[in-house]
Image (cartoon, rainbow, N blue to C red; front, side, top):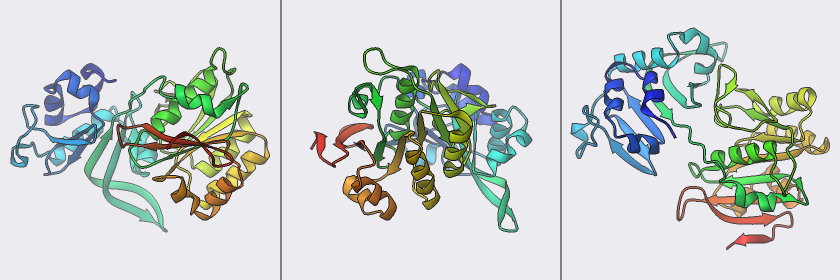
Length: 318
């Protein structure tokens, strides 16, 4: 959870005053803050949206909401980067920057390219501040299925967007890294954090608790990162978020052949849907994954809908 004192330093202009006026309990539940030039200030919380007025209160009508200016966005980026935008230029050209606390600011604007390669994003017109929330212990239940006789086996998390898969993945990494008395010993875990959401590194240091035996490649493409970790850090487990590209599966094959266990996530509504994807479907039906965990938001965010074993037999849910 976040506090005003730690979070306010990331806002500039009128936005800092408005965020300061938000109720503390409400601030702790916020998942996203959408800031668009001359568009209503919008906060997302538990799958609900709230328009915010200049006095920090929830607007009953859209017309009452505060309309951020270009100055608000410029000052916020300056504050969030500690007045060193150049230091974050590599991240920004990828569409985001990670700030202290592991929170991530997505940016859009005019994309400048050179020979087909993105060089920078200028005239930034909107920000999406995604708040990092750790839920320690949320992986307790699923680890009973992913770990057998003290050994963790290849595990796939299947989840629709915004259903808590990264939060669950992060806690699995933390627990596998630290070890759990009576269940398994701590393992060396390598994390390829392509979008900076798992570890939430700020100036190279993980802001989220990912365990004492975890090594992170921050903002690195998954396929390259998996192979780098194997060569450089000798992990027992490699964890990646949102696999999907052809090169990801080529790297995964190398991971599996090297005897390293894989923990990964993929977007999907259910097992049948992801089985229809050519390469991933072949991996699933061949029994590579010892455990397949499907998330849902039917009752609540992060709900475990069902769990399958490597024979695709449902062992939990229905």
